[in-house]
Image (cartoon, rainbow, N blue to C red; front, side, top):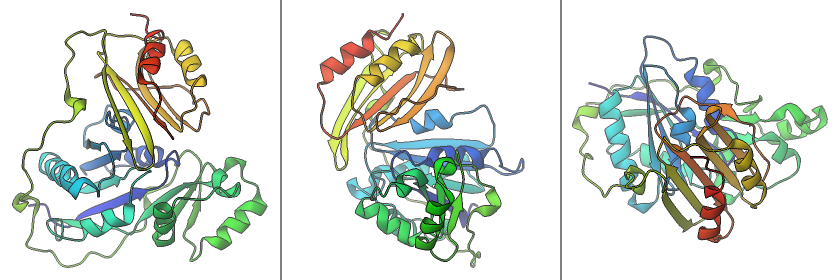
Amino acid sequence: MLQNIPTHVIAGPLGAGKTSLIRQLMAQRPAAERWAVLVNEFGQIGLDAALLAHDQDGIAIAEVAGGCLCCVNGMPFQVGLGRLLRKARPDRLFIEPSGLGHPLQLLDQLSRAPWLGVLSVQPLVMVVDAQALARGEPLCEAQQQTLDAAARVVLNKSEAVDEKCKLLISKEISKNRGLWTNHGRIAFQQLPISSTGEISPVSVDNLAVDIDIPSRPTGGLWTDPSVPICSAQNGEGGWSIGWRWHPSQRFDAQRLGGFLEAWAWRRAKGVIHSLEGWQSFNGLNGTLPDWQSSEWRRDTRIELIFDQPQPQLALQQALDECRVC
């Protein structure tokens, strides 16, 4: 029976580098351990699980798309986490909340039934964009509260922050909580760890949350491979739209870069089947991202987050022009 599974919540605002940090940690998994990752995204399509995908046994990845883990009565979260634990039976669990979510409410949920005794929640980790902090960009209220409560603050993207700014930021982040890094690179030993309490009689086998809920659009199948599955939503924090194309459909990465330049998005993420193979991108606030190779093969996924709703048909038509087959 699985009990008191060490559980790490990796919080942070959009684009801070949460997924990059988890990728770095995944590469450090001991061969004898099974790990699981539960990813929450604001949009409906679900990109972070695809960005985390890699060819390695011993790591199970699941996602809860469409809003904050602690919202909608928590039911998608309860079901998604319960199924992941039953399937993966992990020795360690990582949870990545949405950058537009409420991590402290999630932590409160994890400390209650049915997870009490099943999960051993470790001290909170917060990933922030050090360059944004240096520019004085404020965090939203939920993220600021999370920053104040975090046991470890990973100051990511620090390569362009000068020593004077680092000193000022370090003074604001008290109790030696700060850890400066780039590309989410930290050693597993740098995660804050709590002491393990007594084993509770509750186990993952006794969870009573395996109930059926309506399937999300991400599970749809294509009646025409050339026509994508599209889903949009308007919620607290912005408007998102995402597409999934059949894996046979290929895209021109250069044309897609031109498409991204033409729209004022807050966040752009994707994994595409391009002429050069499978590639991923991950951009913030209109800054064009670098392309990286990807091990994802299930489908092409693109997701955009805007401050306000955009003309959906115009976006769709512009993306169609980036497709080559």
